[in-house]
Image (cartoon, rainbow, N blue to C red; front, side):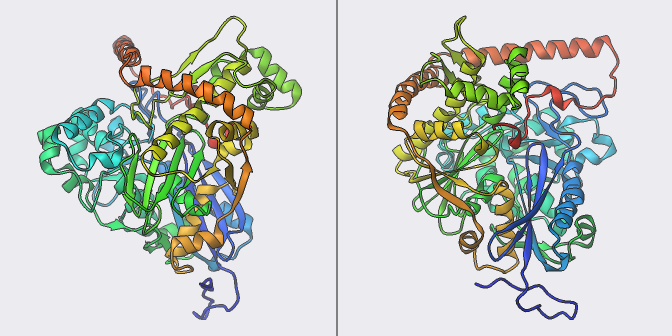
Length: 598
């Protein structure tokens, strides 16, 4: 299908002229906009805007109130600032005539969710709720609803709820219903004022188009919408009688299919972005799932791993299967006509960043500076000099909990085998390998469930670490293809914008024309793969011992930590009046995708 030409001042199409779309990727710490040519996916320019408030995990902005453990909030105005700043900047840098832009699409981390009024106003912007943390955006990595998730899983299993197997048997604390139940039970006044419980992916489309449409992706994967039905009132009442109408009154809304047009760009949003009023605004999407067509991975068996602060694994399949510990399977969850599967790891790049920020001696930092390289690359280069297993270590990649296949965010990190001879690069390599082992466990779960992974495609900021990618290939015993765009999710959004604007018939066709991938860039080394098999066997022993009830010490330690922090928080509040201060994101464990690697 030929690209649709732009409309000239006369209202008639301009023959032979190129058209363009804008893709905007909203990440954990920033939003990125990219200008893309629709006929071939060429990326003309991009721009990044860092969120002013970053991740609010310590102190609520402007209040001085310290947050409890495992909280992660954001401020919705930061998202609008991306539209105001990154989009116009990318457009200016591209040199593209705004009149030739035919559509805009966005993607978001998920489940990132906020309570709003009927017109979409975030409750955190209402005077009566500005000091209530529950009124703010709950970021995907907000894990304080684990207790509610545990209850959802227990009662769903007891009732043999039919939807539970579609999520690998477990619902995550990161998702809509667990966070919604936490809202009801900890802030009933905010819950009562909530007229819509909105995924940020849909809220930003609402701001662009003036129309609230739930996207099929987050509704299916994060909102427990299966076969057009949410969990029953009876089930929700079993969780809490006041929660019975949650799906009906807070969640249920019109569903938009991926690649559909949600509406036209409003005059206000046109002023923010510098784009023409009325151009197509695509239905929202999730950062991982939207990347699949950008990697030309729209056929069954092609798994895309979007590797950044965390990793999300998505793949299409032509059959419906129950995969233990998967994040979900949704009909049309990635592309129409196929089942979209999702799994993931809650911590990857941010584990490496934590290690560098907290576990590396000053001597290594100075040596990296003297070598003119980053600490990450310095440690990588040293680690790469030694054969597999020489460090004598094995690690578990659970510093931010386990998303798949255990679905338990009360789990925590482990490094076994340290001695007085263990060096900084040894621990760093063990963590790199641990994330590869975690991915292998996910691939293994799919294969054993009759949904084989036939190709592994990597995307995201961690691609720049070539040793890491080779390690993944060796551990997986699979070639690794890579997406050649540095802005995979944003490119994927631009592809969906092209479909919403009518440039292409569907997402598959648009992905083939606009996607960018290089096949089998990394291939496994047989000797290293054999050595990693032995280490992976040890990883599995630790994985099941700590993760499947053999030893519950991680849960007990987390409970002790919460009690201690709450005691300290209460003592601090009693000893001194609150002092307004901004959240100090530098003290958190957050890291931008592009900050880790070479």
